[in-house]
Length: 171
Image 1: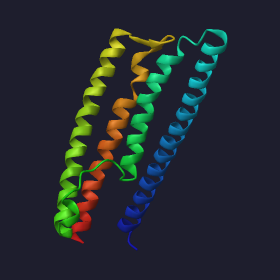
Image 2: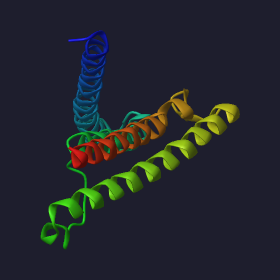
Image 3: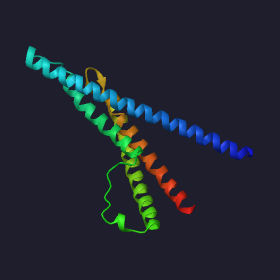
Image 4: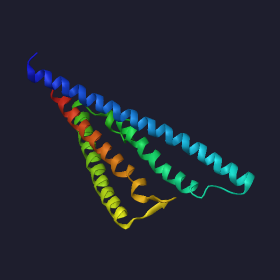
């Protein structure tokens, strides 16, 4: 194997390892946030029903957690290629046409996700400049970081899938 081929193998291995690390982080965050939501919601119910009190920051944190779980779930669905698709006529098309259609829809999804990520970054910049507070003294921009990160990761995954589909098409 020549030096260039070895370098390509090393790069593929590096990217595969980085991709796996991102998957582990996503899945761990998703599980931890879901557990936290269950514990916090149960605690809020118990505190309200038993002691007529509650945590003032509990409800805002639960609402924010829904955003995080939703986007982490969307990232995982994109990673596993289990996101929503409309394929009424797709299953009846020839294989070559399917590849082209999937590449086009993945490219469109990548563009949309990239646009949302771009505007989410602008939102975070504005929130940081205005020093908005989400709850309990936590800056709003920190709680909203999942939006550009989530949509940015999904955009990258869709774009990678476009190139994979086109590469597989040529081989």
